[in-house]
Length: 103
Figure 1 (cartoon, rainbow, N blue to C red):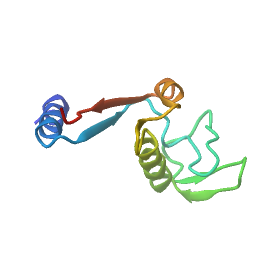
Figure 2 (cartoon, rainbow, N blue to C red):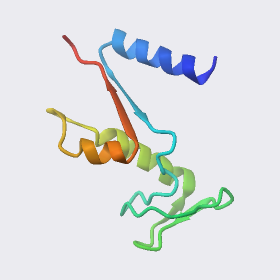
Figure 3 (cartoon, helix red, strand yellow):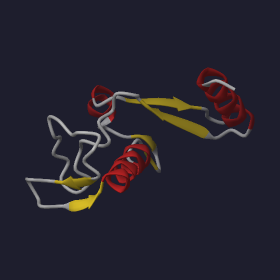
């Protein structure tokens, strides 16, 4: 199964179960962004396995940092009352939302 079919199936299941699917743009800099302060590095070599932020001195495993950024991107897109005021800024950051609501 290719990625297109995988995403299509996810969208179908979300619609079926009336839930939401949040898709983060493939160019979202999850590895280059500090999960503590939000500073984005200009470059980060693939061989660098530890993320070190020069701004706030955070040091953590690169994949963990990226996972935290993706979790925050998803959790910050929707509030209890629905979409919040920062949607425009998040859209510019590369976060795409697909929301299926109960009718």
